[in-house]
Amino acid sequence: MPNVLIRDVPVADLDQIRSAATERGVSLQAYLLETMHAQAAHLRRRAALNRTAARLAQQPAVAEQDRAAVLDAIDEAHADRGAQLSRPT
Image (cartoon, rainbow, N blue to C red; front, side):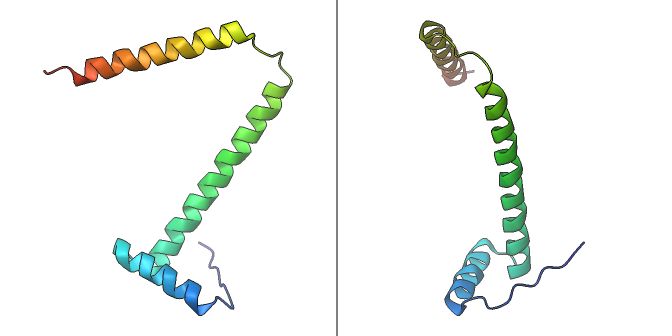
């Protein structure tokens, strides 16, 4: 696995990051590795969303009546599922 070196990190920033790592009970390296992994995942998701948005931009718009019907059906399904989950077993 490659190594990364970051130079000229402001002391206040490093202190804050060290504190965050300590609060999570992990080393500075583990904290930074986890943070970099999360950022990479975010960038992958963002790229996928951008590709999807580009594909959708080429599609005709959905009629407002159809859009409202789908959203109402989703709300109803969520309410039904919530009711199922809140029933005593």
